[in-house]
Amino acid sequence: MRIHIDESQRSVTMKSAIVVDGTSFALNGRNVSYRFHVDRASGDLVSDHFGRLVSETFAIEPVGRQGGWSTSAGVRREFPDLGRGDFRTPAFRVRTAAGGTVTALKYHSHDIRLGKTELEGLPSTIAGDSQDAATVIIHLLDAHSQIAADLTYTVFPEHDAIVRSVKLFNGGTENITVEKLTSMSVDLPHQDYDMIGLRGEWSREFSKSRRSVDYGSQGFGSTAGYSSHMHNPFLALAPPTTSESHGEAWGFSLLYSGSFRAEVEKNPQGLVRTQIGLHDAQLSWPLLPGESLLSPECVAVYSDTGLGGMSRRLHKLYHRHLIRSTFEDPAARPWNG
Image (cartoon, rainbow, N blue to C red; front, side):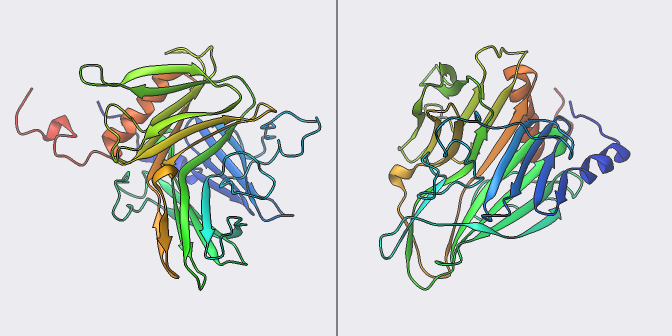
């Protein structure tokens, strides 16, 4: 059954879907907020919050523990790179013609638009009209190498869903090679988590696997060239106390049927980072000057009503904004029943 929303409710929702205060950005659904800002000193795009709905005046809770001897625990870039003080797994890796892998992508500009555009050559969510979704594109640039990245965020407020994809550009004069590219990278509040995935085989498709997130890196993926019921491109994180109907849960679904990798890393200070995107074991994509590489979309949802609430958000979004068949709406079927 479709959820009815009258136009007055919709307009209020879309008005607050993306709120920008200078270079601070808030993407809001009915029950979720995704927030980040530009650090004035460094120009880095810094993650602030992904979770329950918060107001623009809300004091963002620390992502990691404060104090201690380490200075790297507080580094939480939206598109984390390699070699600039964050010693956790990066969201991307580019190798230059000279063999360098350090890329300093800084905020350059941004665009905001109602609705959503489809990804060229890739499956993607769709917005029926400008009242379904809102999009912000963050333009990042390395002024030295002229390597650039566009981070495209779309919020579907009715479904509490944040959709992100990344496009890397080679704006320089020499060839580069993309060796890693994730669609989503998120640092979550400090607490204990379980990692939940879906695995299977014939007659045992989509069996749920739940295990504790330990220190170090852990994850799963596919190098078979396809995903399938054996390697589902979906990852969820939830505290150990979260059940089907109670507690917090974060879900990350990659709209891609090729080789992928989902990874969760817990650093020595207890900070947890989760990523999902193209499998880096099979990625070595050359970009000539002027060329670009586009990642698949990742759909991220948050629920404070357990794993069931998380999965229902994904199902409703996909039912209305991914399936393009005439059978998507029972009322459009050529027969009754």
